[in-house]
Length: 416
Image 1: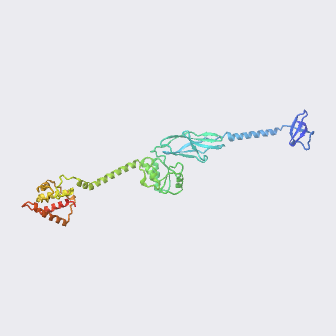
Image 2 (image 1 turned 90 degrees about the vertical axis):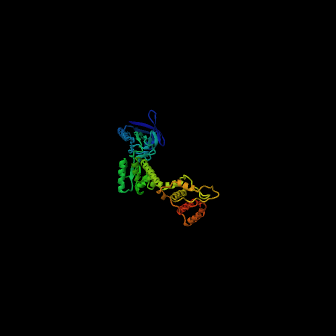
Image 3 (image 1 turned 45 degrees about the vertical axis):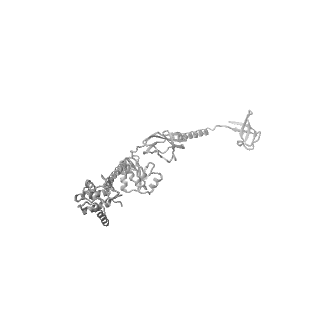
């Protein structure tokens, strides 16, 4: 279609064209021929380009299909949560790698009992987490919430329960530097109690067992705050039937500080009581006779031979012995007479000594004999001889043997 237009005004960017019916059309001056001025007549041919239209439609449809296949068919996948390991106070959860498709990640959060427990750090790299400080033999519900630019996705709820104190199946041990025999014994013990042994230090490792604190595994266990104990800790768990405390089983711990469990404590108590009873039984024969014999009060206090003298249990026994022996041979001499003392007949002493029961001969060796110096014994005998003629009845001579024994008893009764 050919159209004739008259140029009305030409500006720097726009030219005003007039149609035959006096209509004004603004037209880009760049598309007009050169040296155009007001009043010039230009012919413009207008036609439809069908090929170009078809090409544009095809390009647009291809773009729409590419967008649909990229963002409309594949979407982020909800996370899949599962339980890896459980102990008495902790749970280890793990999940599959996060599939975001073409979306961008905003956050990944863990919920416990429908309450947010925290956000997972580095969710594209982290695939497990450990929840500690839980109650013993309690039930918990967990689920993950994934937030992306393509929407929010939630995992299935996972119900877990912590173990009882007597359930040892949650023990996961990583061995360190150990002798082959001790390592084999450790594996056999773990198999009996239901635990397991792994070769690497992971998030579900509950204890690191070794005999020496060195090596890369030991360093990683210390970095992850995993208890480092000796193999005896596993034996204690097996013998007690429950989780034993690790305080006394550290590498540098004193074995005396180990807390005894139910079985060890009762046996230790029985052993201690048996030892104390045996010690008491052994100590009684040596101490009881020595304490009981001196503390027994005399049946009848002996007469004091000298004024101001004190009577003790041991000299009384000796006096009774002397009296019993002198009675068989001859009566002993009467004691010295003093003006301050009340006069009493000389026959009272042999009469009283006669009533005293002599101790059995088997018990006499137990009493230690009184050691008397020869000089003191002679002096005592001289004093006796000087006093005897005043009180001795006529025709009665004392036996020298009885005099010696009586003087020996009198000397031991005098307070020195």
